[in-house]
Length: 91
Image 1: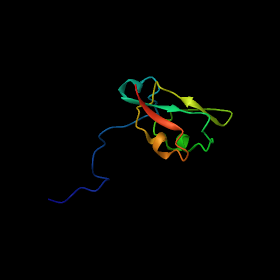
Image 2: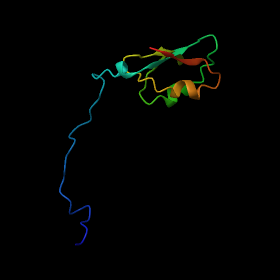
Image 3: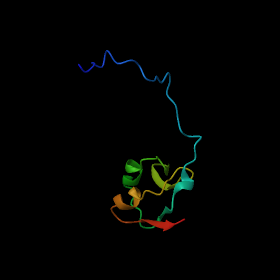
Image 4: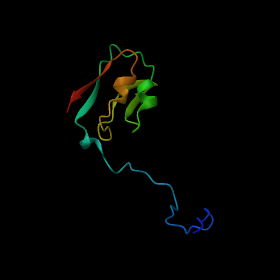
């Protein structure tokens, strides 16, 4: 049996317009949450660039805190921080 080309396969689904998951608060999934020591933060924004859920809150181009409504507690921000000012705490 010959494999079908992509042009021969019927459409299985279609997205007519872009969407967002902003109404789905996913923060309740986490076991650990990031906590920042602002006195150590150098505002390199590595945490902001690497956060997969865009949970880093910026104010005047500086790290202000976290949006715990959407933070899943993955810990990427803490592991990427060059000065280790973000720690993961239970909660």
